[in-house]
Image (cartoon, rainbow over the protein chains, first blue to last red):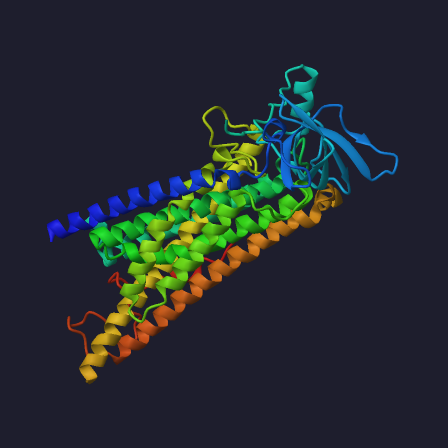
Length: 154
Length: 241
Length: 83
């Protein structure tokens, strides 16, 4: 009985190691499909073919948001702090869309401009009351914590 | 370990703890709800939608915690043939499924105004959906056999194997880029959440945990009585035959 | 008060989240209590059917059977609905 219990435990431990390894290998193999978006640097480096749809993610570059004359089209640049890409989007922006904040746009490249079909805002992990944020800004202490956004693997 | 293996002893412990857990739940929920809905500030970015976080995050923590409880219980049941362990996993499963559903639903209700979408197939959201299906699979499998012991064993194996998904849920936001934000509380340096918002979250998490424990105890008691009923039914049938 | 209910324009999302949570939790509580009640009722039925106790004087007929050799705790079955 004692031995059988030990055998069951051995089976359990081996099974856990096996499952863990198999899962890790599978996830590593499918890494490219598991990332939700690609950073601008990555997009430029890989020379994505035009018309191929993908998601571009990064931060909305400060001072880059411009409403076009038609009132519904917006242009801005998405940056990963190394490189940035221009984006054009026609439609409603989510409430969290802001300069300096994370953004994920889905669309394709056309003549160097990323034409977005959908724009999603990305929230960072910081939570604080407005008064605290204002006080920090006033004191010049506000670090918009460059939202460790484009976490692209090398 | 086998000190707790005795069903009668388990029931005595459950009965002794029950009023305390019930009292904690009754105290923590009003306080937590007050802090979450009125006694805490709006967020500088998300505005009032930050209040959704106070139910979303505790539900998410419980979703992972309950599955881990089930995996450990199932391991105790399979390796040590612990007589109460399998029932404790069974008792926890519907609760885990419920809290995972709350996590998914409240996440969608936050995502729509803030992200601009109810749902995306990023690594975090997808792995939580997988967790939800693992709970449903466990519940279905545990009741799929005429012999509850076989069902319990099959479901126990699923609980243990499926546990690999729990670290994937937790670390998906670190391993891959996702639309979902990274962890704010459980990170190596200081929490990225202001104390005025951290406290409501902690109280709500404690309230959710107390509530889970309470319901878990009720279900465990029911499972133990049901198993006893089956034994009695079998002996009665034998007596009649 | 009106401001509070409006939740800065996000009332549907914020209150919706709390409503979904409350309903789910209430459902879980109800299921748990119903399950316990049913199990206890069945135990009482079986107890009544059972040939007289193996241990003399252990239980009176009709008394709910529980495993903890103590009278069933009313608190354990009556509470549990969500706050």
